Length: 219
Image 1 (cartoon, rainbow, N blue to C red):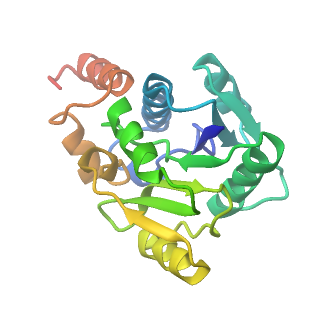
Image 2 (image 1 turned 180 degrees about the horizontal axis):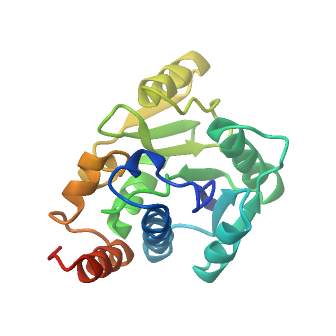
């Protein structure tokens, strides 16, 4: 069994680094659109028996279910991305019996189903293995694990290198996969400026079109 795991804290507080360019409502709608695109790419890929969104926010739960994903409630005692994803990986591995998982962030506006398939294909092995797709800033924009707890999670600054180092330390085979669409995420105003020039996925394209309409500018 294979599962996708997508972390999403909440919409209301999403993308605070974009506050100088977008108000709270616009940031929330952008976060919602990108999460939709990530879930849809996972669904279209046909790779997963289950797609789970881990969060502590009821609005995210409703949206995940509407998109056909499982809402996985993060315990209130946990704190931070690594704790939430560790909980999700353990749940999927131990309670759902997933033999491998693919962790994808919720802010990949260029994602295609083919990108997801490429990560899954790179994970194929009879032995423990991880696959890492590096973000443009050195973070981790896809992390596939076989088994789900093959290594500890080290999201944060330069996390791609940290995950590869964890695999080496654990004696787990590691594959670094280059994928330009997965490498692009939206964290800073400069990333936002690029969106209108890139082939974004459907829900994000809809957000861009609506924003252009209300601002009276072209996307």
